[in-house]
Image 1 (cartoon, rainbow, N blue to C red):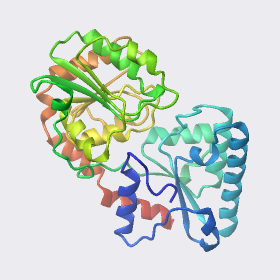
Image 2: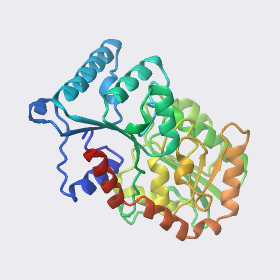
Image 3: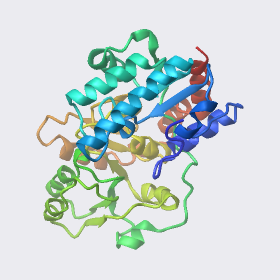
Image 4: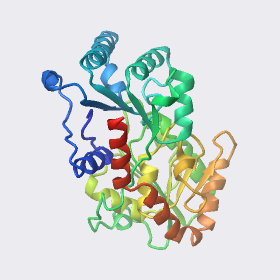
Length: 335
């Protein structure tokens, strides 16, 4: 498995644990142990762009050639290659000729491709010449009980009244996540009883100065630090709604985390979000429509009691249980 663990996201840990509980042997990929890999073993890669993209032109050239040689070696040794497509295009670099070539090569070498929704399947076929017969659907698993509460009173930490309505953005703050738009939309609400909490570490590409200029209300609370695993559930449960104004996304672990904590979501109707976010648990909007995010935030606020019904969240989480995902993943390995 590459990677076998991911900082700030328990998806990999939950996937590996679910497979190991079924007596599947999972090891962290290590090039030094290539000689131990045998025919019928599986190389399962997630987020492959980190394996073929460097910090410079020469670094990228070296890593991409090494990655392709690695794939060739696996095919020669009869080792299966499985790619779970979390993002059709990588967040860094996005749609480019280089990424198209590398991902097309990866699809051609792969035994199987795992997608988390049908639209991703169609994009793989259209963009990277993937074959329909090699693509399998396995949903993103839930995070129920993955992040236990620590007892932290998040509202008290930021001075937010108990009776206030709290919109929350949680996660790494990157340009494609639309946080500046979220600030602008919150300002347009002009609701003194509403508060906005933004918590997460900014990426290197994020324009922090421009972001700070958008803060026009004392009801906006910002923490530009990495949110500890033991506090994530407290941040989500502090929220009346999680707002994810992404400009580009395939699927969202944060959206599924919100569902896992019975918290409604406001998000654009892009990628695979509509496969996971139902009208009973969320408000999806057209990102190309002017004012759509502001209207959606008003709507979810007005329907607060409607979104407090726990049953729709429970039904969705049943579809995303890890026992089922483990079984489906093992079926892909054994084909």
